[in-house]
Length: 314
Image (cartoon, rainbow, N blue to C red; front, side, top):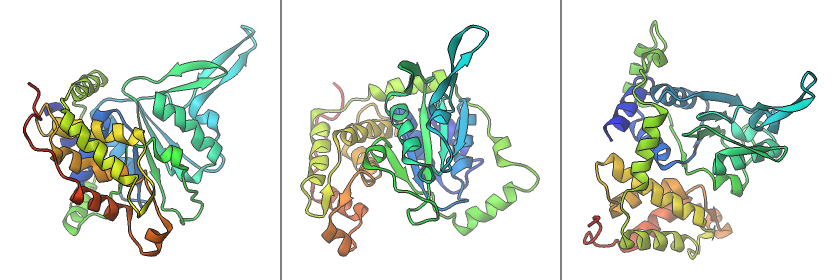
């Protein structure tokens, strides 16, 4: 847990005033998931991803998605070698520890779909051959708001593969002044020191996987997710993949709060971030301007929490 705190502390040197977002990104990394950041340009999305990769000593690659980016740019391709008379695999940008997919919704649907296997299986298949990504493997994607020039909406199947959707937003005035001071004479990324390795991340992930989740907590998660499928304001509820994501993120939250067991507060802390991008609001809800976050907050309010008894591992 101390190492995760040290990673966040290093990233703060480059990203000022976004402590809550940094903690959530760290949780996703420990939960073995992927991150979608939907925001306006220039708020530090790329800087944050690069800072995390540097602090964790991970191989980071960045792809700027445009309409002419091809699926093979992500997955790799086979090239004929005249000297050997054989086809040889040339790996794509996706086979790294941390892939920064910038403006993912500016590229074609065909290229977007190339990320599906990569994000779910942490591998790509080219000409029938499976190529594994190094561990850990994380995709941090950014997208512009739908309606921005050149932006295309991501399909539900791809949205569902992102563990959370986050927004960084504008910094407050004090943070913005601090940012200006930090950038006088040096790039803040140069101040970020490596404090962990890929091996350390995998060890922490293993610890998070072993965080105890009682039957009462699992039932609580299932009730919350089930309520999204029955709510009149929601046309499409959270998928079983989302249920697993809530459980994993709650375990990561417990880990960062120095516990080896999940409590209801952990579930409540992650529920909206995990589920808001996975649901589709009904037509009536859209007309009434009911937002996904509001619907999920109401589900949290009316769903009884389990008692604290029996939540710890015996």
